[in-house]
Structure formats: structure tokens, C-alpha cells
Figure 1 (cartoon, helix red, strand yellow):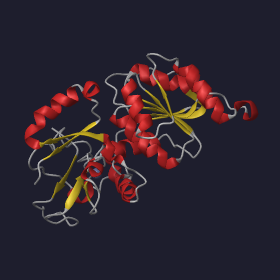
Figure 2 (tube, protein in one colour):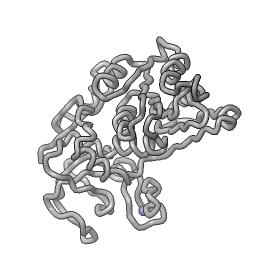
Figure 3 (cartoon, helix red, strand yellow):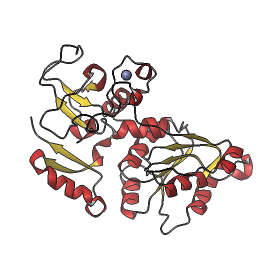
Figure 4 (cartoon, helix red, strand yellow):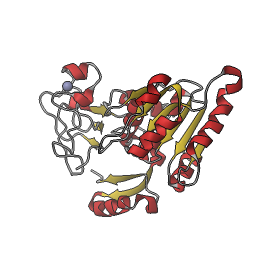
Length: 301
Ligand SMILES: [Zn+2]
């Protein structure tokens, strides 16, 4: 189990040239051979001999020791003086939010952005989207506590709870302020809608609130098909993207953390020792009640 982690190198295979024993490393959730067609195109999640295999097709990181195939392309050496909590967010969460959300959504300076789902991945999108300086970031979630945290801690400018508010009306109201519609003729709706749940309902929300010419970036992992309102989106020139994290932006995100442009350590709400891992699972099983975003498990090697 497990596809995220930071660690210390204790043994090095003979094909590895970039790492040595005692190096401290970030383990990317995506394994990349670095040589195949997809790796060369920065589509590492499609790697012919890698992709999402850790904790999926091979033993994962929730163990005392873990073997990382193709280490030269699948690990990142870390600088000193960066918190382990921040580094851990570079395994999966931040690259996912950045690559599948902020980058695929092509967020530009001044854009209005809606993020549907304020869980860990929604927050990762919220953090990375701010690098692109949008004018408004609207978080949408049915959990008031998650909305409060998104606004007070992580920089959301507005929040909407679909359980108690009319999403479309509120989006129209917020975006009309930023679009100055009466002068430019721009229609209400957000420029970028980012789906971070993976359900039919939340994907519909994105389709309902997008402005003509906007982009929908789907980050959420869908368990089944979701319907596409092509009869509407076609005429509105709306772009739709989806995908699995590749990890090509991890180094850049690490630089942003070192330069203090990104501060993801607050995402870690709970810490456990490795022998308390069952307790960590119990806490996360009731994440809402326990106000848990990410749990951090350490074995103090
Ligand atoms: Zn490859």
C-alpha cells in the first residue's frame, strides 16, 4: 500500500547514477523509465514500464523499506532545511493539483477559477493555482469546515456550499464583478472550472458554471462514466481536459517551496509513528469529523 513518501537511500542498484546511500529523496508516485515514447513526451503516467505502479502493481511505500524502480527518473533529491511535511506533498498531491488542474486548466493572470471539491486535491489545486495569479478562486464543497479552511488557511477568495446555496447564481454574481460584463460583453461564469471529486454531480457543476471560451480541467478520479453536455459546450468553445499526474513539474514545485512561493506544510493535520499506522487509518476513515486533510507517518530511520 502507499504511493507517496520521502526517504533515505539505503541501497543503490547498479543502473542508478544520480543517487547514493544516505541521500534524502522524494518518492514520486509516478515511476518513469525516462526512455520510452511517453516518458520522452512528459506523459510519465503512461510509461511503458512504469506509471502508477507503486502500491498498485508493486509493493508500495507503507513499509520499512521500499524498492523504487528506475530511481534516476522516479526520485528527487531534496535540499536541506525544507520541512518533511512540505516534501511529502511533492510525491503526489501538489504535482497532481498543478499538472492536471492548474496547468491543464491553463489558468492565466486575472482569470476567475472555481475548484469543485475542497479535499486534499482541491486544496493542492488551490495552492498551485495561486502561482498564476487568478483574480478569484472560488471553492465549492458541501462541507462548511473544508470551505472555512480553504478560505482562512489556503487563499480561496470565495466559497460556495451547494447544500445551502444556489451555485450558479452565486457564481454569476461573483464573476460579474470581475468580468465587468456590462462593459466588455463577457458572459457570467468562471474562466476555469476544476473538478476535484470524480462524480457525475460535480462534473455537471463544472459544465454549468463555465463561461463561453472557458476550460474545464477534470482532476477527480471517476468510478464510472459522466455525461457530457456537448450540445451546450460545443457552441460555447469550452475546452475539457483530464489525465493522471506525471510528475514532470515536481522539480519546479520544489523550487517554489524553497523560494517560499508555496507553503504546503499546513496540509498535514495529523502525525503518527509507523507503529501507529492503524490509528492513522481510523482517523482518515472519519476525515470530516477529525478535520483531517493529510496524515504524516514517520518511522524515524
Ligand atoms: Zn517510460
